[in-house]
Image 1 (tube, rainbow, N blue to C red):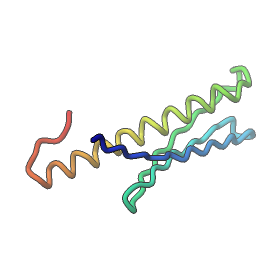
Image 2 (image 1 turned 45 degrees about the horizontal axis):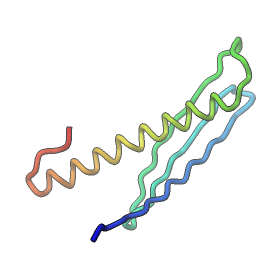
Image 3 (image 1 turned 90 degrees about the vertical axis):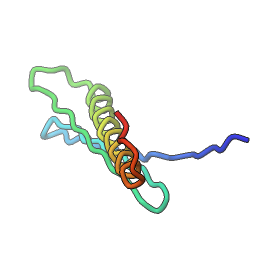
Length: 87
């Protein structure tokens, strides 16, 4: 029988209009611990004011950071048991 685990990631996105900056925070809560990745996007003054683009970039960067933290965490667990970390 398959074992299914469900993780839920909270993704908060905040646009700071006066700074032309968008910040995203991705949080994963699991096993009584949490991991958090952050990402930002900056709009150049000559760029179009397209909030969705900033949201997408900031969110993607936060999720990439979160993915890296998950990989690091997995590697540390493997090393505790004498296995090679993932590549």
